[in-house]
Every structure is written in structure tokens, then in C-alpha cells.
Picture 1 (tube, rainbow, N blue to C red):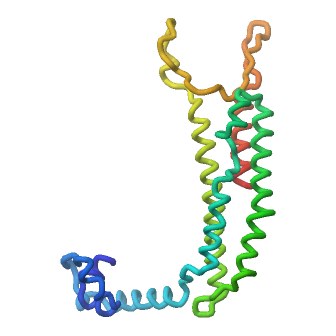
Picture 2: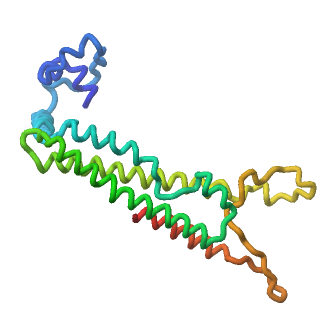
Picture 3: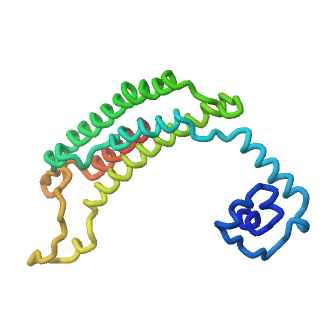
Length: 227
């Protein structure tokens, strides 16, 4: 559609885009011209343009201020696997790791509720919003979408660093190859967890089990995703 609009002189005139002609070299038309298109196409385009003109909420001072406010919170993730405090405690017991991450998640949530939410409300008390076309519902919907995207990015960033931390401890294929002289460097990061190898009669077992570790790691992930 964009190519058609730029290369068709009738569309450029209808949409008042002539001022772009010195800046953009319109692509050469290769397909249908306006006269060959069905009337329904032009009607649909006109209707879409009308809807956008009456419902689109352009950036307001409030939205810009909310975006600036979020910059001080976007680095406060719902999980901590990189701080010096966390690294100093490695390797950790499974329960200690889960308790540490739960505390981080709760502190971040508390910061959002007690600081971010009140400061967001203060933006609107200090600067009354200006509704485009007087549509208050559309305006506040756009603000809700803005802040939902901010929270979503916080969760996504938390998931990314958590995944990266776990991937550092994946068992490399080289570890399955015999290396009696220990010539290969297979592990270059601190171990994450403390695991005991127990002997029960003729059986060997790990404590905690790998299944318990898996359940705990998934539980931590679910905790900050559903926070």
C-alpha cells in the first residue's frame, strides 16, 4: 500500500503528500493505477484514514513524562542473577536461591506499587490531560497500553537475564568426551547450586534431585511472570 501511494500521483495529491516528492523518489508503478482499482479499495482506505484521524491519540506531555518516569524503573528487574550480592553467595542451596529470588521479586513489586503508581497518578494531577477530539476513553486506553507495554518489557527483560544465567550452566557436549588429562576448559563460570552425592547401599543419588531443581527453577520463573 505504501509503495502504491508513493508511486501514484493521484494518491499523493489526495493524501497531500506532494511535499515529500523532493525528498523521496517514488518507485515506478508496476501494477494497477488508481483508475483500474475497484471502488471498494478507495472506500476502505478513506474509512481507515478517517478512523485514524478521529481515534489516534498522539503523544501528549503526560505520555512523555510517564515514559521518562519509567526509565528509573526499567532496570529494576523481578529477578537478580547478576548483582555482586547474588554472585557472592554462589553456589547456593536450592531453598536459599528460591528465597533470594522471591525477596527480589517482592521488593520490585513493592517499589512499583508504592513509588511508580503514585508518581504516575501525580503526573495527571499536575498536568491535566488533553484529549484528542475530546475522546477521553481513547486517551486513557492509549495510556493503559503504554504502561502495559512497560510492565511487559520488565517481565521480558527479567526472563531474558534468567534464561541467560541458566544457559551458562548447560552441560556442553564436550563434557561427554573422556578427558583424563583435563586439558579442556569445560566450566568457566561459578557453580550455581550445591548438590550432594549420596550413597544408599549400592545406589547413588543426588540431593536435591534434578527434578526438584527443575521444579524450583520453573517456580521462580512463574513467580515473576505472574507477579
